[in-house]
Amino acid sequence: MDSLDEKDVVALCGQVGAVLLENGAETSRVENTVEYIGRAVNLPIICHATMTAVFVNSEKSATTRIFKVRVGDFNLQKVDRINTLSREFSQHKMTFKELKEAVTEVEYDTSDFNLFEKCLGAGLVSVAPMLLFKATWFDLFLSFFVGILGYLVARVVGQHSKIPYIAVAMGGLSISILAHILLDMGIASSANNIIISALMPLVPGVPMTNSLREIIEKNTISGLVRATDAIMAGISIGSGVVIGQILIKAVLGG
Image 1 (cartoon, rainbow, N blue to C red):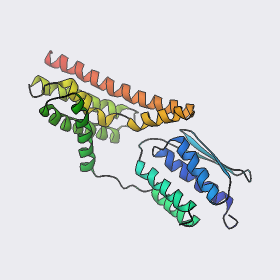
Image 2: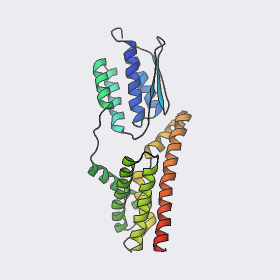
Image 3: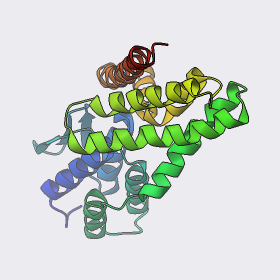
Image 4: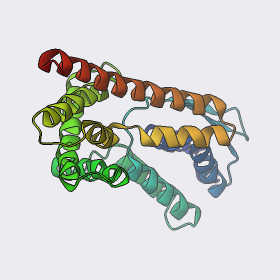
C-alpha cells in the first residue's frame, strides 16, 4: 500500500462499484467487492451503494468519492468479469496497475451477442412456458416466432425512444395483436397461452430477483426502487397487451 496513492485506490474502488451497479449487480455485492479490493491493498474502505450513486470512503483519511450511476440495461458478463478480477487481485495474481487497466477495459467494452443469437434466445424463452400450459405443438411453434417479433419491436422502439417503459409496452402491444390475429385466422388454438409465453423475453426478471434479494438483506431503499421499476415495466407490458386486445376487437368486431 505504501507505493500506491490512496486517492487512486479510492477512485478505482468507485469505478468498480459503478460498473457493477450499472450492469445489474445487487448493492450488497457492490459494497463487498469494493471493500474486498481495499483490504487487498491494506486500505480500509467503506462503501455505500444506492441505485443512483456509489459512495467510497477511506478510513485512514477523509478521502471520499461519490460516483453517480445511471442504471439502465444490464450486462451480467461484466459483473462476472469484475468479480473474477477482484479475486485475482486479492490473490496477488495481478498488480494494481493491471487491475486498473482491466477494469477500464471492462467498463468500455461494447461487445455483445449478435442479433441472431438474441432473437434465438428470445424465441426459446418464449417456448418454455407453453410446456406448462400443455399447449398444442403448433401453438408452441407459433409462440417461438411471436416472442421474437415482440422482442424485435421492443428493441427497435427502445433505440428510437427515450421514454421509459414505452419499448416493452409496444412489444406487449405487438404480441397481443399478432396472437389474436393468428387465433381469428384459425391458425392458433389459444391466443392467451401464446401471449403469456411470448411476453417472457420482455419481463424484467433480473430487477425482480434483485429487488427480493435487496429487501431480504435489509437494503430496503434499493430493493423498493428495483421493485418499483419492475412493477412499472410489468404494468407497461400489461397495458400494451390490453390495448392490443381492444384494437383487435374494434377492428375485427370480436
